[in-house]
Picture 1 (cartoon, rainbow, N blue to C red):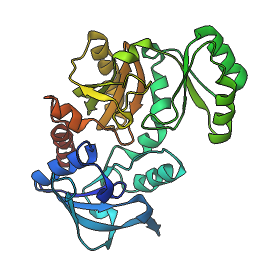
Picture 2 (cartoon, one colour; picture 1 turned 120 degrees about the vertical axis):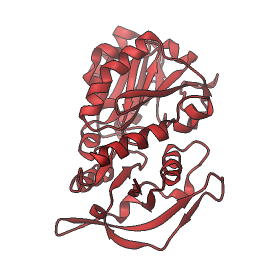
Picture 3 (cartoon, rainbow, N blue to C red; picture 1 turned 180 degrees about the horizontal axis):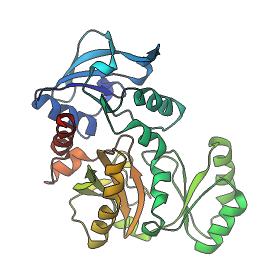
Picture 4 (cartoon, helix red, strand yellow; picture 1 turned 60 degrees about the vertical axis):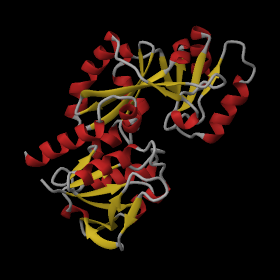
Length: 314
């Protein structure tokens, strides 16, 4: 089955192919004979109810520094494609939200992965709160008194922006940390929306596990171990990937989430688990495909395309 596939992403020329999950998905699609096109979200246009973009034919090679060839831009109706991969990176801001509204006009006749309406309605740090029994104690607020009370109860906490990504602006605040007031002031000026405040999990020193789910089923995992001098385990922040297996608790978490992900059209999702606790459900542009495969785990890119092709045949 040869499909016409467009990928909505940040400029492909700038990506690091070594660890990029979107690139892994494109390599697999090309291997299967699908026709690929590329565009950036700023090229979207809606006219008289129809959605267009200036797209470029795309071919990819797993060769750093010479990984892509793009054709000449052409204005195309996105409804002419069989599949759109929604793979632009966060921040999950109004520009991101607007693109989900536009893509919703053509889905599901054109299959958008992941479902744009449910991407919009399931930001990673909010969707996860549907499962409070799987999470560490978590507060979402920007109210100083609420944060003070939470800190007094749990002593050691983490503060991070609600729509942050890649480990940016994640801070640990201990019971006696005199920087708390200044940090609160900085967050108040920088972020207009609420923030996430969680009980600090000491188990993070052993790693923050990224678990991949494809159509709600386990599709591989990588343990991201933080550097000795950093709280954050994100690989873009210096975390080191390590081979891992699932614990019974992590299998329980996957089993609980699976039906909800399938119901929402979330074909490819990455969840984060520290110790026994679920901390995020990443649906916008999850990463981890290449890290898992490099460590001998499943090829999640192939599993994603198996699901997409099945949905297109239905």
